[in-house]
Amino acid sequence: MHKTSGHMSEDTSSAFEQLRTLLLSDDWRHFREIRDTVESLAKEVHDKDQLIETLDPVIADLLDRKIHESRSEMAEALAPVMSEAIKKQIEGAKEDMVDALYPIVGSMVAKAIQEAMRKLMEEINARFKQAAHNRFMIFVKSKVFRVQPAEIVLADGILFILEEIFLIEKKSGLLIGYETRNESHAEEDAYILGGMLTAIRQFVSDAFSTAGKGELLEIQHEDHTIRVDAARYTYLAAVYQGVAPHDFNDQLSRLHHRIHNRFYKRLRDFQGESSEFHGVNPIINRLFQKYRNYVHDNQ
Amino acid sequence: MSTTINKKICLLGEFGVGKTSLIQRFVFDRFSDDYLTTLGVKITEKLMPPLKKNRHMIQFRFLIWDIAGSEDGLVKHEGYWTGASGALIVTDLSRPDTITAAAHLIDHFLHLNAGAGIVIAGNKTDLIGNPLLHSSGESLKKLADNLSCPSILTSAKTGQHVEDAFLSLAHCLPE
Ligand SMILES: Nc1nc2c(ncn2[C@@H]2O[C@H](COP(=O)(O)OP(=O)(O)OP(=O)(O)O)[C@@H](O)[C@H]2O)c(=O)[nH]1
Ligand SMILES: [Mg+2]
Image 1 (tube, each protein chain N blue to C red):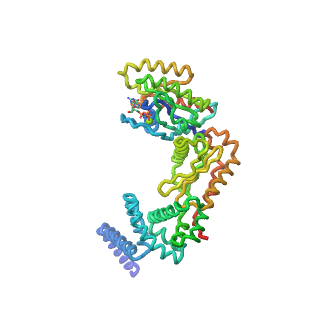
Image 2 (tube, rainbow over the protein chains, first blue to last red):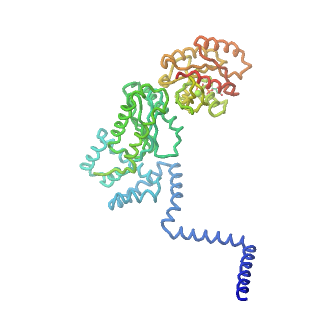
Image 3 (spheres, protein in one colour):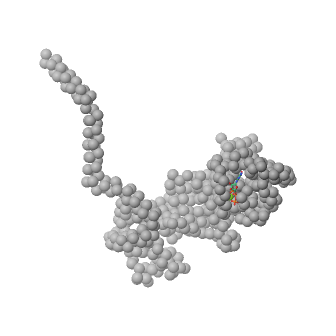
């Protein structure tokens, strides 16, 4: 009997449960949704990391829009604040500060700093036009006391991101090799960019009638630089953000030389068939390996 | 399986004959009556349908260089012509002088790119009311026969034979 009654009561309670579910299921779901939302909101507000994560894209977007609308104003407004803060931070540790800066403030601020730094660099560079980057750094460090060492460290430690490398046949502008840091870059665009680069070179040499002699080496657009190394049959063009390491151009030339030596005959007889150049991309990739997560060191 | 081969193609001809319009029609299937003259050069990419050449299946990827038009056959911008495997030479059937000019351009183009493929387009066939259309068509044919290259009457406006012009260029390209 006990058993049965026990069974009975189980049955009743489950029946009751069922009834409740039937009657209240909608409200219940609603309630649960609200509860979850409140919980996650509470978490986001209390958990500092979480809050930062939530706000980060908003701030980045906001800055992005602001910078887009009035870029120079923004840079001007940010520069003094940032460099003050940076100066303080930097006295602590440069590494920490670079780490701290990126995820929290978002890439747009990094851009603004970079722009401010670039202005500073340009100003100084204008004074010592001929000096090579590294010689210039030593020179500045030892002689120019008006410039804060911290600023130099920062300029030196500012980012360098290698974005894309193109190997382009010189005459036709056709793409032979291509590597990118960002998988989402469409290769179709690379074909067109390859062509445009040759066209620009052509335009410049036409405009200044320096055909044969003048090799266009560098194009700057906003915070991107395109560095072009010219060899007999090809251009090797690197697109990067930030300030290139002092040996970068050298490395680029050397890599180009290696490719040229290895594929010399095929480059000479090039008819547009890029499948003959499968071996090129792995070689190009070495440069990406080399400069992955590159941070300028300040000797 | 076909191999993809990239080829540089130039569109050459007098200003306003419809070079840009032909590319817009061919690649994006659109047309505009507005005339926006091309400054310098604009490059467009188009993967062509596979075709058979010497018993091999190949597929061309065209990098189409839309180059600012010439005036009175005067060659400008020839720096943009180098390394091209072919050219679509465009004329305007309502402007006979554009055909004379085309002859100059072809000469010069083949001088820079020996053995390149050439197709001549007589564009704006939709202007049927135009009295010059017929005679232009004939002089175009004569020019093409002299050079033993194909000529095609096109209209970027209606789309007539636009695809044919580019396909026929693909067939003309050297290996
Ligand atoms: N009726 C008609 N008009 C055309 C046709 N093709 C082009 N046009 C018009 O002709 C004008 C010039 O066309 P474009 O394609 O810009 O000529 P283009 O050869 O690229 O000229 P440039 O860049 O200056 O050398 C535009 O107003 C076009 O709308 C066509 O097939 N029929
Ligand atoms: Mg045009």
